[in-house]
Picture 1 (cartoon, rainbow, N blue to C red):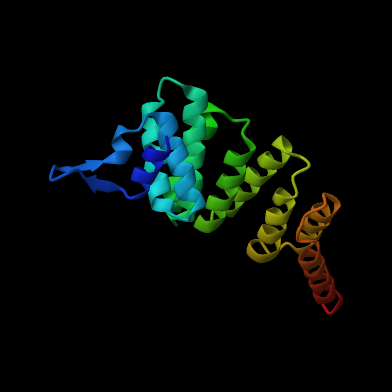
Picture 2 (picture 1 turned 120 degrees about the vertical axis):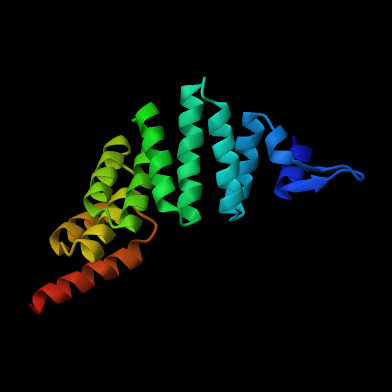
Length: 187
């Protein structure tokens, strides 16, 4: 297993004067997923996307794991800045398994990057229903409302919800709340 991951990280390799071999192509779907997770963790989103895509292709007969591979593919594509492709992968993952929080959350991220702000809002809202105690949803909704949709009251509600859920960026978010309140007081 470690040998497969080490070889995969290099992409292609030559064997003793023989032709170059695409190491990713010879991994089984589980190994492809593991190698892609490692590539994603190291910031190599292009390699991660390739691995998740191959895993998804190999898992057509296994819908739950295909949905996971597609959801991870979407996350890698977001990291690589390929938002349209991310949406396509995430929408397919959602169609297979509509109850995955991370798929809905990442759809919100991709839609925001594409300027599809109402789709982003709906995706975040769906993610929030699937993981009601997760502070990441109100955090991103607050940013969406404040910066993109110019809805300061909704942003305040989202930021306060984030604080109530114990989000790790409490100091930063409290400063955002204060700034919005100060802007509102001078209008």
